Image 1 (cartoon, one colour):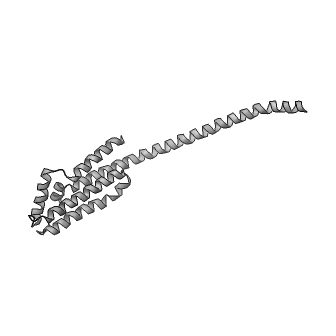
Image 2: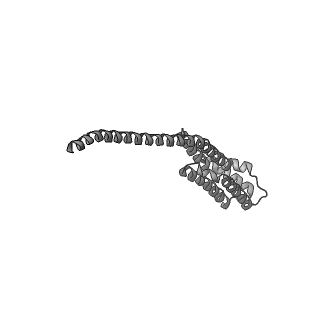
Image 3: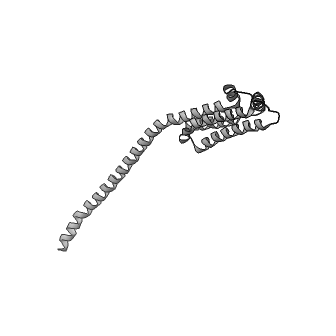
Length: 172
């Protein structure tokens, strides 16, 4: 009886070892296939997402160009001579542009969106600061004051555009 059990074990042990090795190889193969499939899915998603991300950067660049004070003042002319009305018109134009591009934030980094938003707010502050100046008493003087201020310094949009260019160059 003992010989039969030993004989049975001699037949079972190689079968168990072979089964364990086959199980390990099969499990490894399945894991590799899952990783490969996940990689291919991720690659396809990136292929589709990249054009959308680039388009978002393009739209934010266009937004920043449009709110640049020198271009904004050329595009939005005053309806009258009241400086407060013109201030409100300029700010409304900036806010409208921003609202039109608000969905782009899901395609760009948080830092990029924050810098774009900061550039918008800084431009609005620049307009408000120029409006409260005692030298400015009309819409035309407001335009002149803002443009004069921009001669000496960089617009907030320029700094944000530089950041966007840097970020896009890092995508590739």
